[in-house]
Image 1: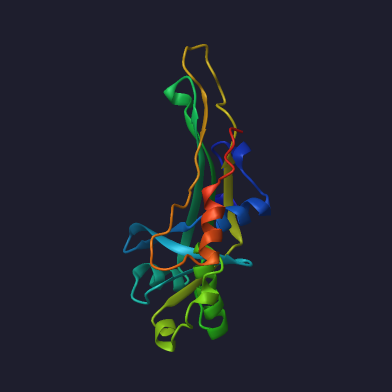
Image 2: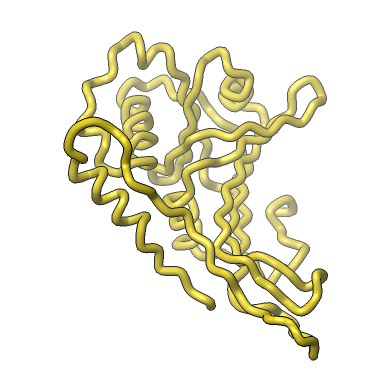
Length: 211
């Protein structure tokens, strides 16, 4: 479609479903863009992917949630920075990244089973295996939370990787500085549960690469 067509560096466009899944599964925050009273607004949100749907949640009083669930057009952006690309000139400096933009119209999740699955998925997306250890959500808590589902149908995916594209004959170091989001030591009372230890391990030894 026209709005998902990548014009700037089209060679970085990705049509690989694995890239879509990896970006959505690895990122923790998305940004939801919408228009209210002719004013463009962009708000960060926690999210989760489940099948062909992206779920966000929030207060029913939230303007983001009200707009996203109304069927109005919205877009959702997710991005990961994998490295800083240092070239011989400021003009050629760049980043290695993976980014995705979803275009669509959301719907409010009213089915109780789907709503519970979506809320569980959001918890486990941030800390895998966490939900099964928590007390069940009360009816009051579920009622006080709005969940919106956005179809993963119309998307634009862009990936940049590798070294600087151009290196001039200039006496300065060039290359890539890998970047990754890592977990620190947990702070709390009592023994750290296995699912928290596993999360820390998964985020403590990132397999960064110069490629």
